[in-house]
Length: 547
Image (cartoon, rainbow, N blue to C red; front, side, top):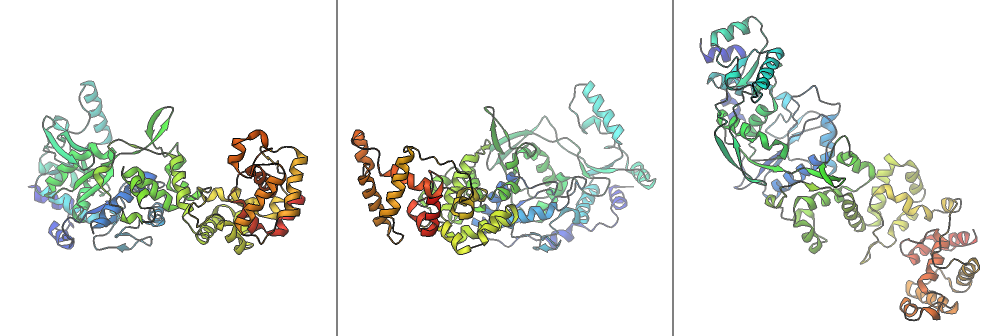
């Protein structure tokens, strides 16, 4: 009995690997085109690190006229969650990171190199496992959980590395006929790789981000096919990346330690290995120390968090690009109106250590992004968000969409547009005073700042609305009248005048306008007062003044 008979016994129906080599030929792409992928497991929510990785992968593929595909790695089916696959695909689409090829939400494939989900590629993995068995490069292992535990305990006592390697491999040198007899008797088994590695020898590897790294060779006889016939991650990824013609694997740096094993798998299977780029994790500062952004501890680790908070997708992508490439921020300052697609991403400019996630910085980016939106886009996005997350705001805006547009149009489209909104969940608080029924029924504590005397406040308000207010004034006329009012009541027409001679005035024109602002809005800080007065209109203003 030989290896061929053993392989036929284990995988009697497996096709010859030549079938798959022909079915999935080299891609017809120009020289230098990058074929890369995002390969998540549907075992929970989509992590912001996954979005980050997908952004980098898609950007590089796009700017080299290559291919970005998504492959769902679901071989660990015990950990799979309901709707895990659709959540991955929906999140990527939401952030304009839809792949060129992938599984569709209805289970069909979009692309010629599928199936794009590993549980449907079982026959493929078995074909390549069979080819290794035929060459004597793999073998069936009959060790039980108890056997493996005993090996581990003995290794620990002997102060040796744990694992299935070298003299600890009980089934590695089992005669073929004995192995076949066990299989025919119904004994449970898995298939292991027969590693030729020597840990005393080193391999040198160049990572596109981390540079040159040296590792000891892998000598572990890893499992490649589990007892259920499905492959382990390590084996499946090698077969898949070869057949899908991946030439650059972009993944989290937690996989760096697996590089010796993965390169070994490629060589033993007769494949040309891809290049690797291991991305440093997104970090968070806590008590002066850095740690990885945690699924358990940090709500912002989940992509769904940004959706729920109403942080626009463009802001999230801008921020992630900011931490991905050190030169992006300077590029953006010089190219404010350009698409992010115009930025030339360089993977070699990615940081070797983990980028620090800064929510304050993200919200600043978001304010800038939202400031570029038209009133129509703001209204549309806020309505879409509030329809799911804030029904009260949704109904408020829908009562009069024209009025809502005017509110969102305040200080928008200017050279220096307003930057007071960082996320849609801020919107209600930032505009609620513009609605009479909410403003007039609220218990507002008016904070007039510098001018606090009630009689003086009443005098300012009464004089302005009796003598100076005209809803038809243009902005310059309105501002000149505010200065006239200031002069009449003993305030400096200009802030500079007051600063030069503070004892000569009660205050300045800014103090006067603050009194009007607070009386009409209940707030000392708002967007442009003139535009607010124009949107509110005379009837609404007089109701507020008389409150």
